Image (cartoon, rainbow over the protein chains, first blue to last red):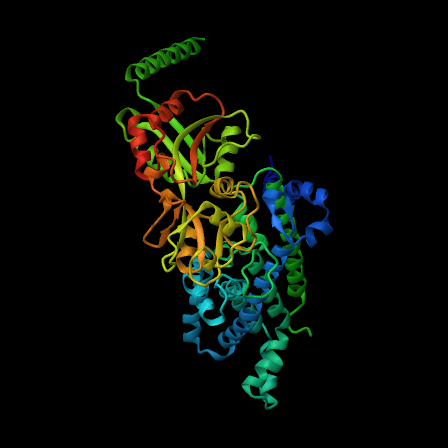
Length: 290
Length: 270
């Protein structure tokens, strides 16, 4: 066999192998989608989308599957985490990219990465022991509340928001900054009139990914939001979330109850897909495009 | 041809030696997978440890996993586990399983250390969990709201509690929900208006107070004498009549030695 042919065969084998491996990842996602939909579909079909979405009571053992309390609960904790986490995260990113001296960045960045590495059950325990009594003391109520969940989630999404925003800020072409400074703008004016707008798409991506993380977080939320399956009236009410309900009830659920949890999974899936695809769309916009 | 013959002879010889050896030793070996209720889990782990530390059982491996009563029964039914643990009686829909009652457990009603209440009747408890009583002064306590802490829907402990206390009536939805015994205890210990329930085996009277129900304290003695009303069976279920090491393990649990370990935290059945 001549060497050329040998090379060609080798090449095509490797190409096939890599293609196969790439397929496995895609097949994995597809299988999960098929499985979740297959399991959750019967309940969705039996009770109807409208009834599930407008139902205000979640009593799975009595076959009442109202998703509204869970959706509102998820919405509140996610909103709370964004309101608290986004300004803090962006401010921290600006500080790291623009203001902090090199040695400080070297100190702060590992600390933030460490924040990302803490297991969520530890956040939950911290929330239970420290934040719950603190919220109770400062804001009243019983401490177990959606606000407490929002606070802990804000801390948890910080690493995502900070690192992606910082990358976006650092990717802004140097010319923009130099031009702005040369025109007589101060450093601060340059930051908030030039750099942040230029890095807008990256920052929005960071926020959206942070939102996805907040929406998907389970363990920490279970431990501190109280999980009351009623539509919460305020941020200080305890409440249940979509992920928390699946996480809590999965172990014991049987029959239709288990299927209903997969229906909750479908809703989560759709929400996360919407969030992630909007992140992709923003991420594709080039840095500097306004 | 010659090689093939030799192989067959070797194989037969090997099998004979092996079976004679194992017959002579009379030692048990193999693995038992035990899955199910997190209430039964600590007891099952303790039993497994003691059982496998006996000399003739040195080669038996027992793996105990949580997952909940429902999961345990499912696992026993589908034979993904040799034994399923359940902390509630089997439902009528869960047919075709062999059950062995290995212990009894009481469910303790717990309140915060700062709560002045020391006793409730089952009728009062029922009204609290149904949401009819919402203030502690209605049962003779201080003027503060009652915060009901419940377990998640489907939990074995909750199933047992609802069956015994609520008699299948719906509990109030205005409650906190925690997914484990530890979380309920933790919640009650940090919330002074809270009331919750945990199994007697996990009760830690250092962090919470346990209430007398209908005049009886939640103790092993009162449960055995059936004075304390809130109690439930611990089951080990198998798909078919237990045999081999599974049978040996279950028989040992029911023996004097096994029941002595049961009695350390729970209530023995013998």
